[in-house]
Length: 378
Ligand SMILES: *[C@@H]1O[C@H](CO)[C@@H](O)[C@H](O)[C@H]1NC(C)=O
Ligand SMILES: *[C@@H]1O[C@H](CO)[C@@H](O)[C@H](O)[C@H]1NC(C)=O
Ligand SMILES: *[C@@H]1O[C@H](CO)[C@@H](O)[C@H](O)[C@H]1NC(C)=O
Ligand SMILES: *[C@@H]1O[C@H](CO)[C@@H](O)[C@H](O)[C@H]1NC(C)=O
Image (cartoon, rainbow, N blue to C red; front, top):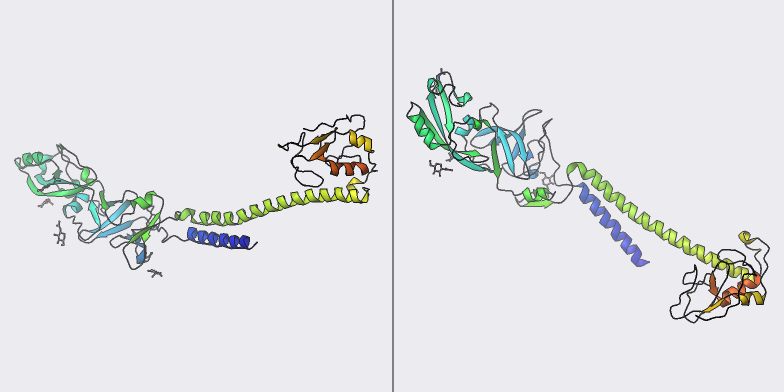
């Protein structure tokens, strides 16, 4: 009983701990207005989340209902299109819609972000008459007299110089993939700037469904918290709590059922024994029929069996005597009622049949005519 109480207390404590853990993530995911990009570690929504929710250099600003921004120390403000926490990538675009201009002055030092790949691009300034409708010029850098072109092909760049173009600069531009033999001027530099970060490494944690976070306020060490995502948190805690209630309830129900079954069995046995002691069934309302026992010769005519080593009892019987509830042993002599094939210890059933002609199990009256005369040990 003591150990039962001990385990119950232990179980409840574990349940409480599990429910608390399921309900408390390190920092909940934040959102800016109607913007769909979730903001969580290593990023932090400035002004809405405490510093401990993010990593240095990963501050996200809430510009408007729909816009979030990232400030790079030497390149100024960019708007954030998307954050891929699994691949550790961030997509940036220019608030003034001229990414090539931003690329010309991009300096990532002082920020945690680096280019995924870099490719050298040469920027050229050409008279508009030369390039007119023949090449993809960068519209936001061009005007009516001068067009700006960019190419990753050094060969093409040098060819253009000979046709009155001037090289502005050659820069390693951050790109998501590199192209080879790109013999074209490209306007593809209008695409978002894709950057990645090397620290903190939270991709693996994200992949496992965990939530990355700082181990403590005072260090930059990170930890992976294996708690469910924001939407599932309440549900998860609810599940844990219901399980904690359901399991003991189920155990209790099974216990009561088993107890009731044995209670019923022993009540039945007691009934039978009481009936034997009184020599009458009058004390038992459900047996309130006129009881007449059988005579000795009829009782003796019922089949008697001596159990062998296997202790196997024939017919619809289990391994205990329904009257005394003790298990049959080998060499026990049992007697079976021919009509219903129910068997009992010979001492138990003989005493019963002297006061009642009914089978104690199924309450059928054995017919005296059917009784054969056997006495064969098994
Ligand atoms: C960590 O910082 C947050 C706010 O920045 C504070 O609420 C929390 O209590 C701090 N935790 C510890 C362990 O110092
Ligand atoms: C970026 O800016 C810093 C500070 O102005 C400077 O020291 C560094 O040389 C710059 N890097 C590049 C690649 O221009
Ligand atoms: C870009 O050009 C510089 C020289 O201007 C060279 O050192 C560097 O290796 C080139 N980078 C790539 C990715 O081709
Ligand atoms: C066009 O841009 C060039 C620089 O690329 C500048 O020198 C020129 O004055 C501009 N022309 C007009 C009409 O704005």
